Amino acid sequence: MRAIRFEETGGPEVLQLVEVETPAPGPGQILVRHEAIGVNFIDTYHRSGLYPVKLPAGLGGEGAGVVEAVGEGVTRFRSGDLAAYAGGVMGAYADYALVAADRAVKPPAGIDARLAAAALLKGMTAEFLVRRCAPLKAGQPVLIHAAAGGVGQILVQWAKAIGAEVIATVGSEDKAARARALGADHVILYRDQDVAAEVKRITGGAGVPVAYDSVGRSTFEGTLASLARRGIFVSFGNASGPAPPVDPIRLMRGGSLFFTRPTLFDYVATTEELDDSAAALFALMADGRIKVEVGQTFPLAEARRAHEALEARETVGASLLIP
Image: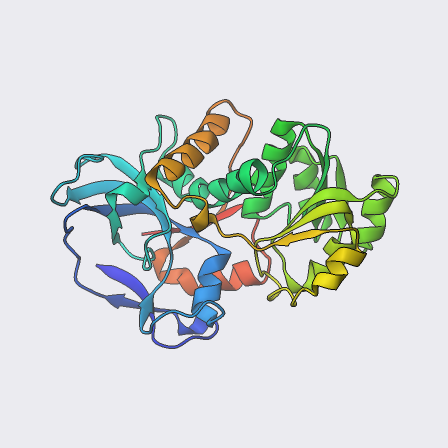
């Protein structure tokens, strides 16, 4: 089978397409023939070395496709089933992947492999952020950075489904239009406007009780200054580089603030949590309250180009590799 591998960390140029042996499932595993592979920012962190991995390595942790074979003891899937997974695999950028059966889910009717691969990791991230990490309430103002990105688009829609007042930040007028179409009540162009000043203006000086920040270094100060007293700063990405260290005294002086750096995998640590998170996402997709946009697709062989577009912030919505 074909697979993307890298032998050293660095820019997109380190990604190589190679031929490797197709694996066979062991006990508790399924072999998934990919129809679509999710491209996520965390993949760039592994490739660059920000999140260290043992080299040489495969890349990617999200995919969907047909179960080709099942290992001993597997009852959750049968050959021919559609399966989707997000996490637990390092090497999804390939024609096939071995996945632990208890770490994959069955998308419901109406959600095909491309939609599942585009939605699962980003959608479950949005789920744990708004429902379990810093739960939103109807009527609350909330700050969502990178609102036109893959996670951002789902966050905006989920926040509106809850009834929150969404303040979104984007980098261009085109992306601003997209955020408004998704339901954002206010849109800030972060390159041209002072985010904290705009948030305070919109909220009558109070600030927001919750801010979700996937951008990292470049938005850190603005996010911190946008919080209301006892507000929660949820830092869950590093698109512009890692956020700086947090001085606890700054949290006190800012109004007894809270800062957290969560990861999805601590919120879907059990099969029950995984199933509940995916089910909540698929339910909102089924009733139309969340629409997932596949903004761009790339052939598997062009993973480098996908990473270049992602890091240049040229993408909108979800990006997929197609074997």
